[in-house]
Amino acid sequence: MGFVKSSIAALLMVASTSAIAASSTFVSKIERVLLDDSDFAGCMVLLRPFPASELPNCAANWATLDCLKEFPESTGSIASNKLAQAQLALVTGRSVKMRVTDSRIANGYCFAHRIDVMDVRD
Image (cartoon, rainbow, N blue to C red; front, side, top):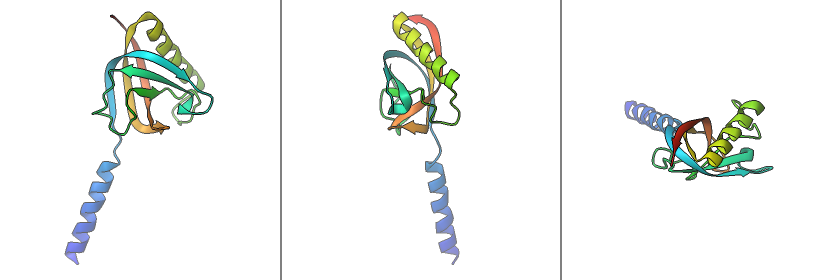
């Protein structure tokens, strides 16, 4: 009986650790901005480089900004401001510092919690 309890406890520990969300903060360039009426939580950015090894549950290179407010932490003004920051970085050629997490996913693409436009250009 002790073996069964130990085995169940070990399985629960493994299951709970695999459910921990990953997030990554990284510097990148925005190569494209996408807007959609119904998919991808409304808007996304194409990022190069993208830390795929740190975010294995995320579809590579894209992150959603959640313009449709599908996630509880999103508001219309925050999503609009993140989109404006992404567009600013795209047209000025500036780098961005992004914080992306796989705790929120839209159509396989992970959520960008934060976007900072940096004073770094090519």
